[in-house]
Image (tube, rainbow, N blue to C red; front, side, top):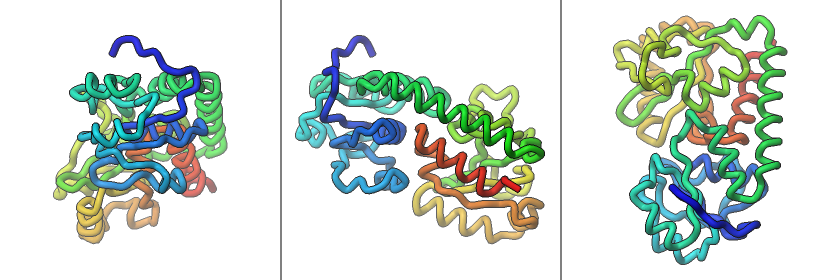
Length: 270
């Protein structure tokens, strides 16, 4: 959003998106405040965050709560919080990344630089990419297995393409995707929707599925117990696996990516 002058080693950091909290913790920095996704609490996969003050949601950050924490750096996203930038920047130097998901690696490096941890961020990302390649090589024939990604939302069912966070992680391993979920020709290759009546068209030799929020959990329970879901070959063969939405969908950081790799090793290794 312009130029920001940041203390060389910021001590009191507030983060306003789920990728930012993953980034800070991955780099050994516990933020003093963090916004939560609207349908969830702070992510449990990052450990005990009881000492982190919740400062509203990613869509509606609590400016008064942020100011009371006296931060020396605020990390956010233009995609989500552009309307709040001037007020945030008046509280403390504020650095925004532009997009979410698609540019998660670039975002990680930029946020790492803002945190004074550029070298550490570059090394963590390199380590993740090396491990993803090693896992892909170790999976052998499984790399040709088509992997389907499905998410039950409160009001829709989504499948995720190659430009989503988890889709990028799958791509880094070399795992194949069903033709439908490659979203070829689509302007937005992050995700698309499927109706409940078309749920059996999702494809994939293996399905990883999750749900967002309590209403999403209700959708998941309803549809995965239905005849159409149960008719999917991957479901019938026991190759449909429920995974953690915090990790696969909202984590969008190097620690979450590493945990996705853990799941792939668990479910796909011979």
